[in-house]
Image 1 (cartoon, rainbow, N blue to C red):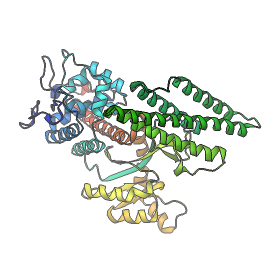
Image 2 (image 1 turned 135 degrees about the vertical axis):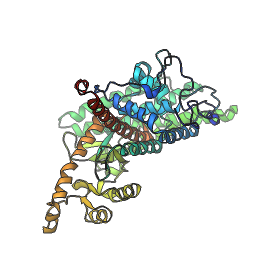
Image 3 (image 1 turned 120 degrees about the vertical axis):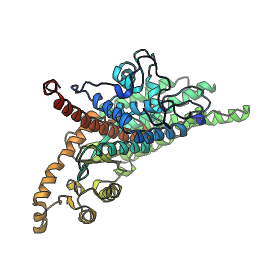
Image 4 (image 1 turned 180 degrees about the vertical axis):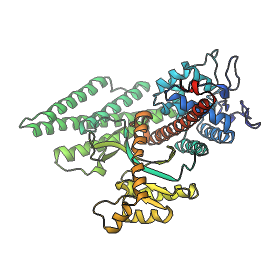
Length: 513
């Protein structure tokens, strides 16, 4: 049973937003299995089982924490809700379960929708029975999970970590950290690809606007886009060739592409001016939907103009463009070029993500590093906040040479007993003694396990390429992946306890597990 002040239906609805939302599905149907009574196959090696077991443990044994989590989700849903819909929306518990499973099992929204509509154990965890006809569409799940703020998902992750720490002994005695690159979902950023992206999006948006408001001039929009595509393909073929006149041909083709882009931009601007004149003459007011389209058009007009200028400077004038001035994607403008020099991909496009893992396997801290930030610039501040949050429980911290600076080692040593931070370059006698100590070598050897944790995130939690759009979507994607990984670790702890219990109760039956 849940606490008296936190019933299945909830004490109130989200009346502020016009959508009725409950904390759980309000009415259980016949044959619905109570979440605490769901039985799992503990011999299964599917990643879904430990995640669902962790959620069941949260529901049954951690009621105060469950209250906190669902109130966090309720806050996000109410602050971003739609008005005057009058329908029953997804419950907060359903949102939590689907958010946990999405990247906990590395699924896209189509896979998750199919699983939520057809997988018996997952539907039981959502609060549905075999007789329930409720189905989850991809768009419904997507739109609801997009309402979650990245800070909310990280707060839920911290609550899950706290629950896990209650089940293991001294999980924070030692921690280890490293960073990796989570790539953006973009194509290779050549000048011609960026120019074509800008031209294509400008034509798509302005054609839709012109058709809606009956503004002529875009009858040949397909031809204009095809013309840009032909030039782009010619540039690609010439760039790959080894002909003696390759550079001259490239300059000529880029001139054509840039002139074509300028023509499209000028025509799009003229159409928006005509639209404004028409609106004033007829006394009409644009809806938010069309205002958003025009705002997006202005962005692509400005972005394409900037890409044209970069192409002129680099191709036509032979200038070497510094990285801070470059644009790597018009769709993900915050993308950073990261040259890590590691095979098979020395150059990656995305952001660095720092993770700190404790001895129990939980990710206790994750952070997306801003453009230009590297490991050694932020580790001291991060560890100081972690030590304060966990009230000085961290006794040893291990990092690789990428985090080394003399100042970092000095500051970390002020509040951590054992700092395993190997020095870059030649070591003096004192440093050789420090790094040759038994405890130092033991913790440094343990540090390599962080690579296994990062591999688990990239291979099992979708952190190879971010599939969500925008800076906020990127942050939320990282937070959901870490939440899924921590629930998986918590579930594995619960699974191991259950296996030990079965072995103690019936040793012969435990052999089948």
